[in-house]
Image (cartoon, rainbow, N blue to C red; front, side):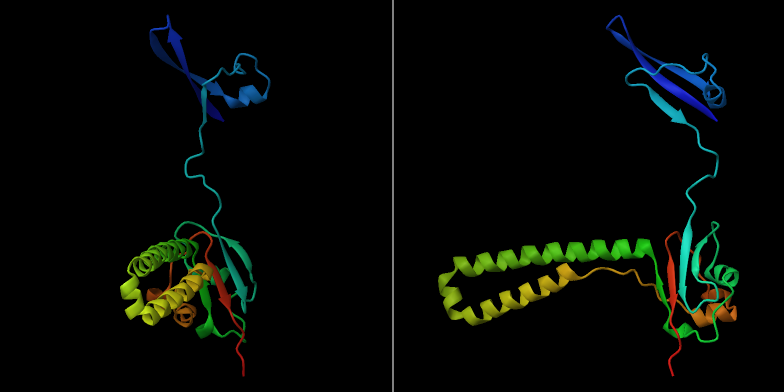
Length: 199
């Protein structure tokens, strides 16, 4: 409940002075007029954050987990620990077929797909211009050039419609068995889906 205002003032139109005013927010909220000062243009109000405070990280467990749902996680918490909190896997769980998704991996994959799409667009434009400029060359290898462009456009369309998923390969059976080397540290936004065993 402490804050500070950084205030800039121009003195005689020639120099700037900086003043830092410390505030007691509890007193401001209680109506203390000495602390409840009026803000001026270009004031910078900084409300200090409790040390170590951050948005609560969560993971989602779905499918054949005894208590599926969204679980808040502590820094450094592992998948084995959260699975234990969730009651473990059901007897019908197909651990080998589990799908583990990680958001930051999905973002990196999507950025790579976007880069590849942009590069392919440039390459196809260059190929198209080259074929158009060179009439004689296009006459000699016209079919090949047309086929290349058509195939390139088809691949480009597939790339444009591709969405990254961020799938991370994990050894869920090993994690469930308690093998420490198989366990992974969780990150905010991780998702685990455990399908049902089919006969």
